Length: 382
Image 1 (cartoon, rainbow, N blue to C red):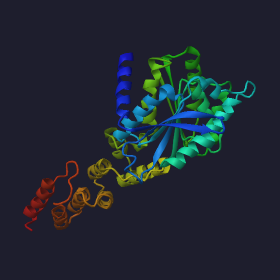
Image 2: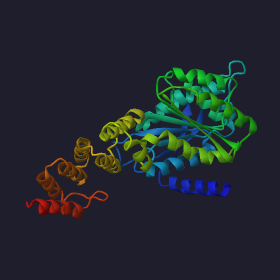
Image 3: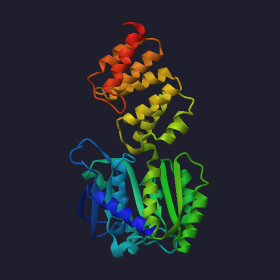
Image 4: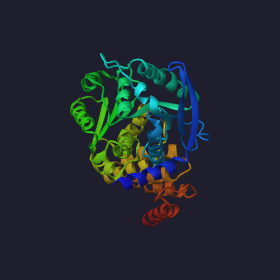
């Protein structure tokens, strides 16, 4: 298992080489010192000048940056998450001072308080001002730094939208404070917690205790995920937790899957085109991204509409596809199918014929369109 994880990390790190890596030194007035940053920009960042990107802030970047950046690049390549800017804070021997908290109230103190303000008041504004960012930020931490990112949940509103907490070494009272605080947070929060059966015993036990409390919270705004990896140690769980966290946090962003088609589209009572509208509205509201609807998602919802004989819904999908992809034949195909099924074969034939010179999409070829037009012509004698 360890060899498999190491091989996966090597592959992910080589993939991240395709993205642009920048090394910067940030002079922090809050810390009174310079901090080294490692920043991965998405592929084609320089050419997609109108595009904005979520931010993934990585603490303990000395060893966490590469596995996070590699996974982000890999997942975004396959459209399982949006392309994102990964910002790593190099900490090295300062991580213990950075995460320092007061012995009486267990809140950031001394260097820990300075580091807290450095991230919130200096680093994030700097990234926003110098790069094209969307208003969705995730923080990643491991043991001490995993505990530290929790403090940002007590800001109003919280600094981060997503929290990836890998085997946290929680400060005293944190396992009580988090369940008390989260129900009062008005913004949508994604929280991922991971441990392993071979993790440090005290850390595994406290993660299990926190899981027991967080999973009981009832809130539409709080999305909680937990993994306890069989056989994973304090360090190997990181390689398994990061991809799981990204997959779960960005589940709504992914193209419609076979499972989603069967368990959601085919079982919903509402017209299926409403699911398409709601999916992309959610992507926009959550991640600040105005993405075009994927052709895969048009095909999935249109197929469901056909199977369920929702012809008006199919017309809506065809209209959206024609507007989204005017030079492709996908909208014309489904509009032709709508006309066929609603008793207007002549319009269907002309719609198929009119798209013969448009770009083909998936199975919708020129030959398919012309064959359907010829069959209508033969059947009705046009």
